[in-house]
Length: 195
Image (cartoon, rainbow, N blue to C red; front, side, top):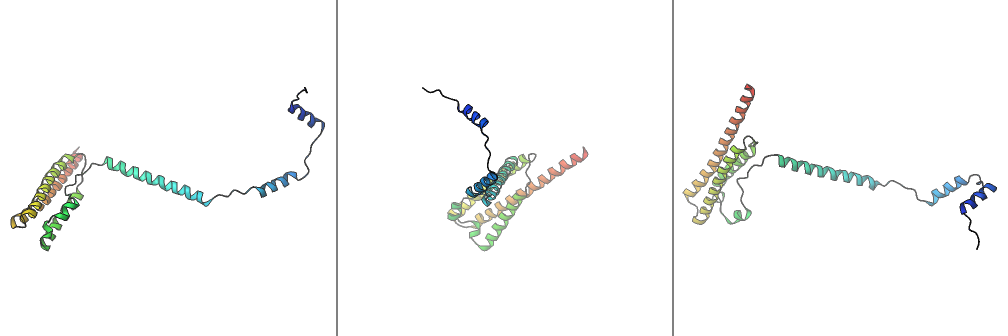
């Protein structure tokens, strides 16, 4: 068998005996040909749009997270006047009897909703507001019972006046709550000033 030689030693010996030189301009010709053969890389406009879209998505997630965080930190208010759509379709309300009664009902409901929207609920006055909200809920269920009575018995003066009085009581109750909250706020301001 023949002796095996190490290729590295063979190449080293060959380099030592002969000197290899590249022709002049070989490197430039090679680079030119390489540029012609390989396509040039260009930056795509879509790349910029992808980055912009991902930034918009991150901002959207941040806003969603921040708004949910604020909702969890703020105290919740109770909704008093909630009726199901099916109940509204099948029943007759005070506003369905005459245009004047409809105006009265709309006035009171709008004013009640406005007063509810203007309430400033905080941790200090939450117990007071909850007490008033329970009473408003009782008045609301009473109003629904009166509306059922209006549907079963039919319209009469007693039921109509009871419905209107119920709306008036709710509005008066909300105004009293607003006054109590104002008194509570001013008493806290006075104690803060005196300290």
